[in-house]
Image (cartoon, rainbow, N blue to C red; front, side):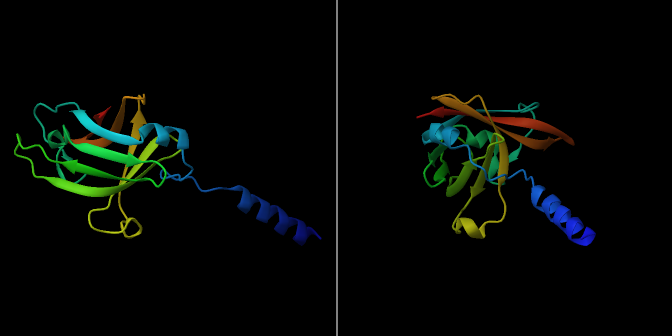
Length: 158
């Protein structure tokens, strides 16, 4: 009887413990619906940005993202992003994206770039901040001169 009681308590403890993950997939559907539509990055800011370059999303210098266009489709968590600013020395880049907002306020992003979303094993987790009907910020952590700093991407609705 003691053995059965022990196993029962052990199984309750194991079932009761849940895994917590930064990529928590419990969605914040209300916030996702607010982000639905077309957006542009209007500013990229981080300490030392006037002197240092940061390779954003392993694509291009963070300043090249100013003016980039992003579309978010909330019912299937897909979208598109594109860099195409002819007045800069930045390369053009366009890719489908997969994204969602979790209950912890994190924006989870995969840049698909000619793959299926399920085949892309890496992505980015950014903090979603200051969400309104017309603007929001995404905050990433970057290594700037050996120190971890926040880089803020400010979005404006198009």
